[in-house]
Length: 205
Image 1 (tube, helix red, strand yellow):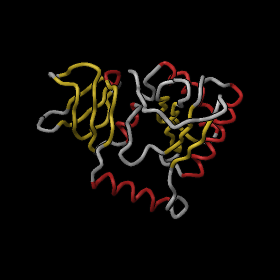
Image 2: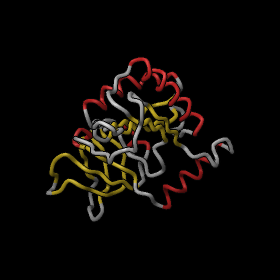
Image 3: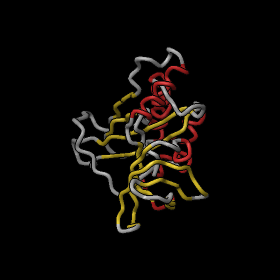
């Protein structure tokens, strides 16, 4: 789930070691939009610190510069695009198996690639992991459900008071260094003379 397309997956393989050298992990990569003449796609990258799952704007900027240097030299993406590096946010996507363990006890929405008990979408409280399965206490169900992680195509935390409290406590524990920082960083890349406005993003499974 860190990637949706084969192009995303190739980029993750490239970006992972670059981020790790900075003490960061890539949470998700999405190259979105159509590569039409006169338009530009968006390369969205979510990252976090390996130490605590957080990130600040200065670290986003450092990662952006490191990735920019590679992209300028290797040129793995055809056409124009805008690079966006950001934090996953409070109501973050859950893209790795370990995320479901880290956020045990918090509400999440999950979408599967197939029907389970007659539906694909679920909402409930995360209950950790068991092997390669995620455990979740579903609304209105007495027993904890187990879902293969390989079936999950989308998962995201639900913004609740408890989750907001966790975020506030994390900021307080860090001190003042990360406060009042807008945790994203954008940069533009041009393979042509001019870069036009972004086109609407369209992801393929």
